[in-house]
Length: 223
Image (tube, rainbow, N blue to C red; front, side, top):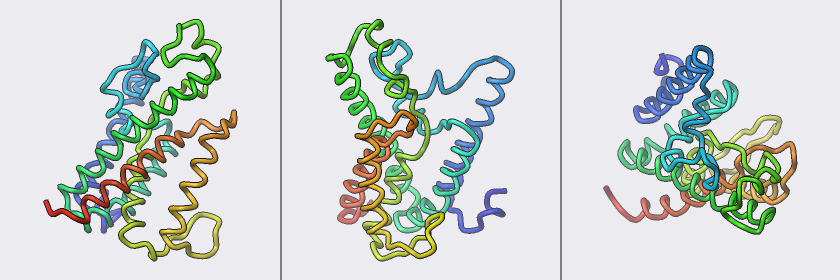
């Protein structure tokens, strides 16, 4: 079905998309029949919270906060990921994607800890102190966006003059300029702490930073 809808989709990207869709459907089933939210189990919790488990650093990149979240991430992954898989090959692309996702979670936790320290003066505050922190600071992180940011970063580094069209912008933007703009925007939103903003900006920046490192390494080595 995916191959028919997206004829240029590559194999590893196809299986990653299918896994994400399957996890989403399983989550819907358990939520409707067992009143159990998969995000509460596999989403990334702050490491001082009782719900934190180490496997969440990895599993959170296959969970999403709703259908539109899943749809937008998967469409982006299909278009960008397939292009990068064609450049890197299946093995290197899979390694690249998983490592970017993993370190996006790690960096997100680090900066979440900075926010917690700002409010409480401790990285491991008492539960009673955690209750005083705004909910957005301790929100559970889910989504493939960090890994996808890494994918786009590698594409921008490999083909900096490639043109991209963005919603509501009627002219193409070069990949290198778009990357710089996105990094600046994510950093600004990450430090601004707007109450309405629950996006994982540090995870996005973490994925982009990991993508830069891996793209540099992969450009010098053959697997």
